Amino acid sequence: MAEKAELAFGAVVGQVTWKMVQQARGWIRQHLRRTPLVEVPELSDLLGVRLLLKAENLQWTGAFKIRGGLVKLLSVPEELRQRGVVCASTGNHGKGIAFLAKKFGIPAWVIVPEKTPPVKTEAIKDLGARLVRFGETYAQAEDFAKAFAAERELVYAPSFDDPWVVSAQATIAWEILEDEPEVDTIVVPVGGGALLAGTLITAHQLKPSLRVIGVESEGAPALTTSLSIGEVVTLPEVHTQAEGIAVSRPGTVPFHIVKELLEEPLVLVSDEDMREAVRCIIRFAKLVPELAGAATVAALLSGKIHCEPNSVVACVVTGGNIDLELLREIL
Image (cartoon, rainbow, N blue to C red; front, side, top):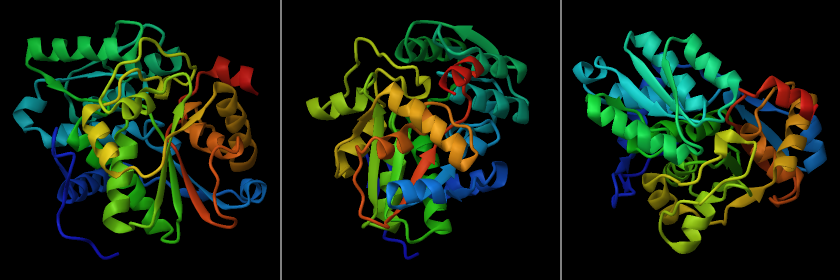
């Protein structure tokens, strides 16, 4: 694919350049798994489009978040990285950081909200990271983690609010376009906004005609609310079982990129929409997503996204670390 001259996105708060995306791609190729783009004929027939699933639930830690964690860690000097890393997480980012800390032989502290599912917290501890529960929301855990890292002069690895993390998540759309250049639409779940921002950057750089749609939980419409007001705001509370996108405050870096490049309003889905999508993905694709990972398919199944007949639609399944009790309840 032809590449454009170097551009910078989100310059108000921290530039993301295509060179950064290229660097992120190199690191990811070296250290992480290339996840497959899975065609699902039964769901394609049901929806009237050619549906492809980017199976990030098959990444080493079961979620896409490890991309951002890896790239952020490798972007800082070695001597600083060796001191240790701190992150805030609703589970998947923390698991990724714990995995990477073990891989690189550095100490890690993961701060999670009190109600983070055991399937995620136990995995973090099993990988050797020190787990700290704090606050009712991700935003509260994030504020605590930033202060914790600053006091101890450790690396703080953001889950989404960082130019390097956005660069890392931009590689997902790049891989999709490599595997299927005829993709017309990419649909991504939205929590803090890094994946949506990165996808928009890749579309702008490699295929400007590409339609990019973001999907939030209707119980946690943090980015939708912020975009409608014109600045980053914090929701007073969130109500969703999809903890992977249960974010009360979007990232400032992703917000400005999305505000600059997004052409369509975000789509909101309910927990029940996501539950039905989990059932359909398991039945037809033989993949097991968590609720947040199924948000994209949920938006299609519920009729909240309208695509041209027979168009090629890629949905990013961002994670598969679902609590087993919740999975039993859904099935």
